[in-house]
Structure formats: C-alpha cells, structure tokens
Length: 160
Image (cartoon, rainbow, N blue to C red):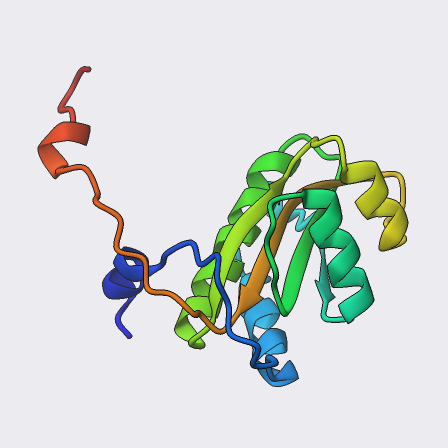
C-alpha cells in the first residue's frame, strides 16, 4: 500500500474478530514502530505487547469501555522532557504499521488516566515510566467510514 493511501485509510477499529494474531506480525509492528521520530533520538519508550487472556480481561475492566480485543500494546516512556510527544509518535507508528500488516487498532487508553497505576502494577512497569497509550490490536470485524471535514474547512494560509 502506498503511504498516502495508508494514512488516509487507517481507522480506529473497535470490533475485532476472534482470530489470534500471529506473533511475527506483532513483532514486525513493533520493529517498525521503533523507527518513530524522537526528540534528540532519546527513544525513551518501552513497548509491552499483551496477548495473555487474563491480563487482557483485566485491562478491559480497567479501561471500562466495554471493549474486547485479542492483543494490545502499552506504550510506556521514561519521564524525559518530550515523553508525551515521543510516546505519541511511537503510538502512531504502531497503528500505521498494524494497518499495513492487515491489522486494526484503536488508541483506547491514554496518558495520566486514573487506571494507569493499576496498569503499571499489572504489567510490572517501573515507577519511573509513564503510560502514554494503550492500543488495542486485532483483525478488524468492521470497516468504519467516518466523514472527514473538507480541506477548505481545516486549511488556513498565513493566518487563521
């Protein structure tokens, strides 16, 4: 898929099939994501891939969005100056790589939510790390087609 088409067709997938995800696809997704841009090339992130059913069920309860998912990636970052930007970049790369591999994703958990301490405890994340995102991963069981604003509604030249 060419990169413009990839960017224009990535969607938040909230319904997944029961099909398990091949480990090589999960690994390829993370392998690709580690090339995300980062301030001063610090690369402060650590990426936790969760496929264990018990842990997934616990995470589903913590997030409390009535979502079921066959896997997820928890993006953690050291508490550096640009941890939120760096963690957001790698999160986006995860979702784009997944799309290229035929997988769907949804960024459902995020930075500084009340459940983050419980997630850190469940996944044994060291205290010095912050949870930036929780991204569900699976084979899509839906094909959302949201309306997007027209270009002239969002573009401004030289000033607002």
